[in-house]
Length: 391
Image (cartoon, rainbow, N blue to C red; front, side, top):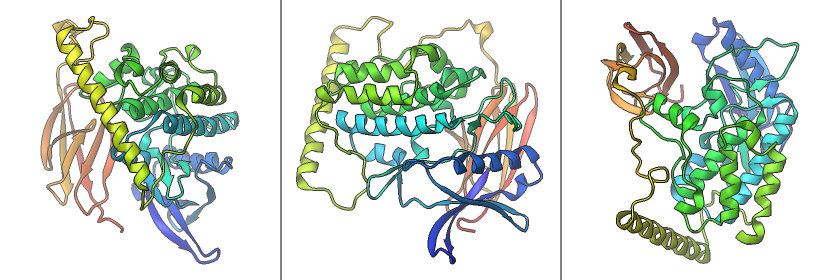
């Protein structure tokens, strides 16, 4: 939808982030309205853990949002660098649940809660960003999302999002539950090759409880996170405040809360020792789990093999009867479909009919991404001119 620039405001003498609507979107009224809706949504919010918006305006043909610049890293990067102790998970989860509760009380549902949309500053502060597809409860406004339309990032969607049903704040709590599960176990609870497989897992599969995977996670904390992942919204926590309180209730078992999510240049020797010990405990637990799995197979309903048995008859399998014809300038860019690399431009790729997330990426150029609908028996051309990074 937009490109984000780092900018300097000479009047206030501060660094800002400028989110500018892409030129090709200016003629698309729904995109412009959605972009402006994001600005209005963020403009309503004044919370220390939600990115602040200072202004929305036009400069010639450019439409932009001026917002707070965050110096730090997305949680998606930090999750790859360090393990998360129960106390850190409780601290992160309760803070995010309360921030989402604040937004929900203002009539705003994020709809795209995922690790890359949560930034951590160098001081350890958390900031929820990117309300570009937020649902805004505004009786006087135009509802941009049509019935049955699917918006969000597949791996972090709630069942009601996948099914195109009405949503409320409990949808965001489901997405937050996926993040907490990933922090606790090192992997997402719902996986699959391609968007359809992920959607099937979200709507049908019940992931193994966290405490059965990681022995460092207390049963009480495991149960709280698993409740977030209930298929029915009614079975989840009623709101973010209730979830935050439930997470903090496990502190008595987990120990005192400490902020385990920080971006810093130095770590004390004691902290590193704790991480090493925690890593060894997790490694021992995984080895024990694998050895037990080999000697005494789990019941089929509880097996964690990473491979799901076929649930459809051959006649039910959707044939790959659509094609993507991808070209880029410059050529040689990597093509990703639903997060899976499928080749380089120019190229023609067979796909299942339906919506797919496309990314075309080339080093030193801005990444291009979009959700594209592929009709049965047709070839859909996608021709992209990539923009040099920083321009």
